[in-house]
Each structure stands twice: as structure tokens, then as C-alpha cells.
Image: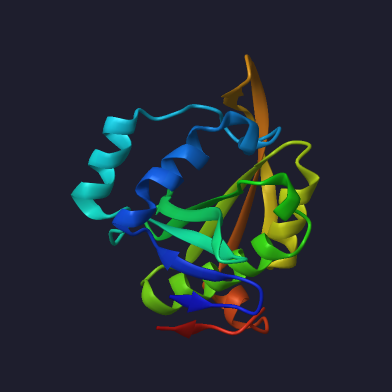
Length: 182
């Protein structure tokens, strides 16, 4: 587990699967900007049983607060060989705007640069998603440009802003929140 001041990150456990699938399947929890595709229960459980949603080049942490799952944050292969991409979501609207995701992203950035031989992390933000843009900027990510028409969402193609953080930039910033790996 990785403990912050407001949240705890931990890997997915078998006891979490049904709850996590229900959270992922509820499109209303996705908000205005998060992709709305829903996996089948069979594929979701199969993916968990194959690798527990955690491998060297991709993985998912659950975000815990108030003694339950409030979101997830994942990393996966990026377009570049020496980096990973990060995606995140808070499931309940009531948990947004409380600093949970900023702390989760800061903890994952620290974890990835501490444990992986990578030089770059990146994330994308749908144009207009001001809250997600603020999370990225608070954690030191720099906007590199716009990926035109890069995502099909709710019947329309949308632009994505591409943000990145290099290892040297992360090391020069103070850690936002304590990192305690258990």
C-alpha cells in the first residue's frame, strides 16, 4: 500500500472485483469527460485473474478514502519506449474537488519514478476538462500540445491535451504528500 495524507493506494484484491466492476460499469460515475465504454464482466474478471491488474508495464491502484474505493489510477505503455501513461478517475461526484486525485497522482508519480527505469510520464486531458488539467499542473506536468480528434466520446471526436513530466523535473520538485510503501 502507498499511504498519503488523505488517501491510500493499493492493488486490486479478489474481494474488490465485484464492487470495482459495478463502479466501472456505472456510466453516471464517469463524469462528462471519462470514456464510457463498459467491459464485460467475464473479460473484466479474466483480466484480473490473469495478472491481478498489475504487471511491470501496466497496472491499476485503487484509491481508498473513507474506508471504501473512491477511484482508480492506472499506468500503461505510452507511445514512447522510455515512458508510461497515466489515467485516473474518481467514481463519485461527491469525492471530487477535495484533493484526492492530486494526491493520488503525486504518489503514483513518485512510485513509478522510484520503481521503474523510465524517463517520462504522460497523461491526456480532454479539452475543456479544467479539473483534470489542474490536477496535472499541480503535480508538475507540462502541457506539450493538442492531439486533434484523438478520442471518440459520446458520439463525437474530441481533442486531447497531452501533458508530460520527465524524471529530472519530478526530482526537482518537492514530493506532494508522504510516500510510504508497505
